[in-house]
Image 1 (cartoon, rainbow, N blue to C red):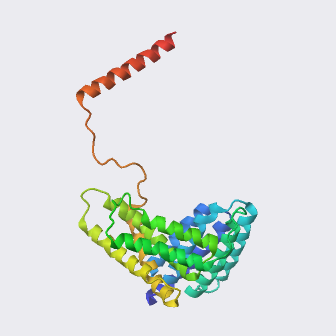
Image 2 (cartoon, rainbow, N blue to C red):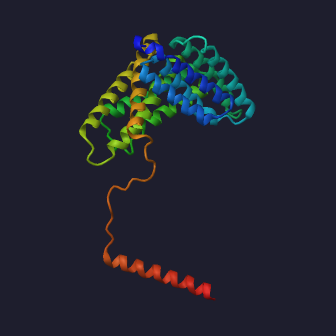
Image 3 (tube, one colour):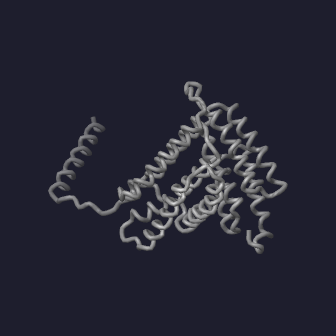
Amino acid sequence: MPEESIEYEKVLREDLKAYLKALDAKEFGLCNIVSNRMMTNAMILNSVDFNLLGAILKEITFDFNLFQEENSLENALKKLKNTLKSYQSSNPKVDQILDDYYEYFDIFRNIITSPLEEYEENKDFSIYTTKFSINFFIQENENDLILPYNFDVRIYGVLNEINRVMKSFGFTKHQLVLKLVLSYFGRMYEYFRFLLSTENIDKIWEEKFSDYKEKLLSNVKSFSLEESYINNSLELLFEFCREWRTFFMRLLEIPRGPKVEKGTAIPSNVRQELDEMVTKLINSKLEEKED
């Protein structure tokens, strides 16, 4: 964190305190808002550590809806609260945050697994499938298998497969970091998809997205179980989160309604037939009321 920002770091601890209070009250919507707020403040203060914490808390909060039993949720919340309270006395560091996330996610995946699923822990298969999924993503992009932006959801499909095997078969810290990188690239990409699906958008946005995609491809190509992968990925995660939060400042929430690209001209003869059909329908309803 830059020297001039150190005096403001108490704001990040206040974000953490607010998240804990919302967690106690089970106000999970507020938890989500506070995790966003923490990432934005981390962006402003250039804090990679708190950005990582905010990114993880948002992922954790999103998964609360997967708990099917109240007791299961309580067990997960207890673990999370104890972990976050330990961060209040001193600023958490990257290694500690990742170790704690690993422990929490391991508890989480065991809690949400249905008793009908009888998968044995198999980290080798989990890693093998993770590498298969990212190689698929690399090949799709390098072979120029181009899809229109509004249909290109491959990043989410790959992320879905990696999430699946991690929850069913186990995982490593390296996979957790990869999952975060893919997830926040995906959040940022939602804004690019919206912009690049719009007519007459400035070419600078295409170039900007292309640069980010190349950085992502470089990252997933380097995926390994070496510590260097984690260290090199955290700065990229910060970059994706920063662009995502910056997009929110530009555009707020992305409009979710159907986008009308062009007006549709109805031929006059068809319009006349439609008018006559509507008139007959209205008249018949009026006659029913009179009866």
